Image (cartoon, rainbow, N blue to C red; front, side, top):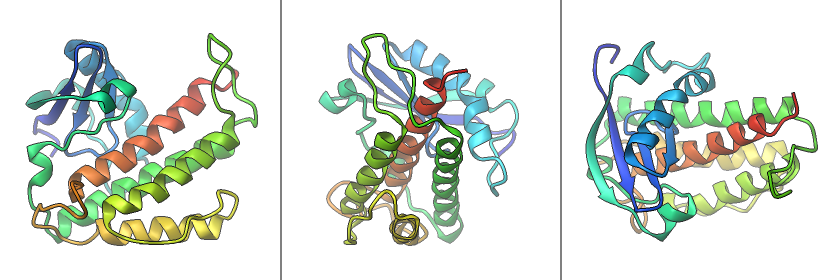
Length: 219
């Protein structure tokens, strides 16, 4: 993939646009306009590359210079709120054994990056300009609860883990990865989530909050 274009999906509204690298789950950033979203996506390449360090799927050098928009879709209220919620037509492409395994490995790397950043973070994070923002433990609680909520999109049922129980969190992630590793013909897993969209959404959420923690950690 080193010489190939990086396929990008744009989810747009007049107020916010998400740019997502279709073949790199979690590399997804937003801004007000399409151009700004693409620029932001490119500037996060090194952080995304670092998130995948040690995995079997490193982001190639110079990937940020090969972004190519291949699909657009109108966003909705979720987009404006700050969630990449639209399923691209490319997300409905089949995924064979190799492709599905790769998706799962990238999601696992995103969770590992989140865990590394949490472990290095202080308990209290710098507040936003209006004094808001969750501290580290609350962000972990939110991410774990969201991951459990995502199991509905994967079509599985599992008890909600306590964020402070590493074994229970690992069991939740293992159950989710087991679904992501299964080959897919591109149809929905449950309701509207496809395999490829699920991987993108789950990895994006983990990395979005990992980077938030980094950005709000006092130097």
